[in-house]
Image: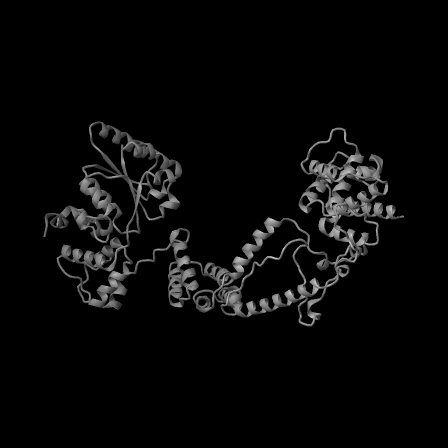
Length: 601
């Protein structure tokens, strides 16, 4: 028995806890951290070279963080300055920094050990930076929390983070043997009770030695049941608001995703034993059913919701069985994230295409005007068709179909995929038949697509006007009406002038001295360019919004401020964007239609 062990029985040490009396006096006596302290470990190499760098020791309670820091100071001849972030503040840090600077002047280094360093706030952590940077102190911080979340990035960049492991069974058994040697006798435990004692500590060496200390006065042999009556198992290491919480829910989620019901039940039990709210788990199960199973088994979400409902009705512990049943159901269900990916693709598509109008044939037409504009025209009620499928295109006009939902062949989604494939076959057949129809049947107005715009008052003009209104809405209809009014007076503009004017309006270029007539002409030419295919829909829409936004179109059409006031429209200089679009856009549409009808007389 060495001298350091004999000192355990000196009178002055009797009041010290057994865990403190058995604290290792050499790095070689530290158990369970050989990956760091061994000859090939990073800390072991630094000790051999007697050159320490600042470091953060991250590990669970009772794994040896404080002991390692103290022994590092001894092995490298540094003054050990311990602080606890729980009880210390900036004033204490200043004292330590001042003393360290004085020692440095005489060639003596300082190892500052900060226990629970994560409890320092950001400003306090920043105070370490200059002294760590210039080597005044070697900082060794100990924490049970993830440094990535709790410590400043600037401090982490100046320190190495070492992860300490919870003590395994071999290390804990070594500690029991040392305690028995220090006490001078073996614990009165049978093999099963000895194994149970180690398991009760849950990897915490300090807690294990405290349990051993409770058994010092026991002399009668104990089995597992007798041991359980005398000592209490360590509470599970679980923090509902910190990393342990997220680690275990991640383990549960991935076990279910990996179709492993045994592991999933284990992690569920760990969470509930740690004090997790069962309703939190129930909510996560519903999310899992939607995200990882979805259409592969549509019943999964109902099972998750049923477990939630049962727990709310029964509470713990009876209701926890319903949650366990849902975990097993979800873990054994077929998996698919096709809906999750499809919804993500749809959101990207919606952002990319902007505010396109739905096709008119799927819009309701509660008023006669809306019917005249083609709302609901050509709509087919799918349940009344021969195959229960009309094959209509429900994307905006002018937008190519994009497939966002791609079902897998897992579970029920295999059937969904086969059904979609059949509908796509029917849709293709309908497209092929429509492609063979005469051109007049597809375009009853006989709209031309030549270089020069065709007046809208010919026999097919109203059909083209409806199609034009569907593409760019009421603003386009107004411009079409003004366009025809200009044409009716015999106005003519060359193609190059039309493009220049369109570019000027689209580019927000100012036209000094422009009269309302010029604005009317701009709107008219833009409308005509769109109607005849001479200008892209995107540029035309931007240009039309800017023309109407200036308020000049309304003024020109109505003939002055008096008419504007009579119709309760804003002054000519006020922006149209401030108006209620649901009222004024139809009004402008009516004005355009009136101009069109007047030109036809």
